[in-house]
Image (cartoon, rainbow, N blue to C red; front, top):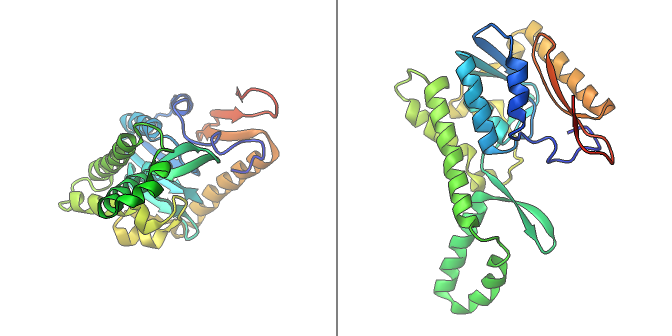
Length: 266
């Protein structure tokens, strides 16, 4: 995010963004889509809806990551036929996050961390009833139903990742299920990756089995991709735009935010 006015929430993938994709896809005649994405991620369900819409419109989707596609944006990569990345590019963990209001403010917590903390509390209280005095105030800070929400979010993310990999990237592969399981388990493992912002390199993703093509293989394509990326970043820095969805014909959906005024769309 480069716009100093926009908040982290402003740049996330949300339900309203589906309209942006519907508008910019309109009029494209090709059944193949090269999708350049730079995003911190966002809502899983909104991402699911956008991906399913695009997969109905296009027979083949290539996802290009000029810099970073994190969290829910990583799911876009898992729903592609091929991913193109530079040596500087990263995907990220797909472990779902919850924004929880604590006495000291809002914090982002991994769904897996919530489940593991509850399990740890149960085990420690079983061994030592006095530990309840330590755990009770801590657990009471969580909102009702968060355990079930965390479990469902984690299961949904892994389910979508596996299904899309098997259906698209590994279509026709006899080991598709096994490969998809390995990739999704790694990307969703908060205990292994430690942070939701952990960058996962191209080499690691290749090692996991994802179909990755090096951006540097085609110098002309690399120049075009990075030109689009840098122009977009400059736009974010010099204007109040904080989200852009644009096609190759120049049809664009741009979200603006003005200091002290409601968000506007153009």
